[in-house]
Length: 56
Image (cartoon, rainbow, N blue to C red; front, side):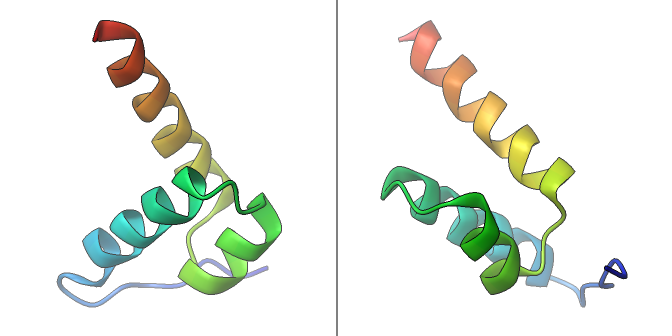
């Protein structure tokens, strides 16, 4: 799958959308398809969420 280039602000919007989807327990495939982020990006988001949760 070819990596998509995002316009200004689109990447941040995609990340926010991915966070919301992760919170709802939506699977990786659907997140990738909906946001056009890479799996690497989504894994980074997951790890950041886990790190923030563990700091609380």
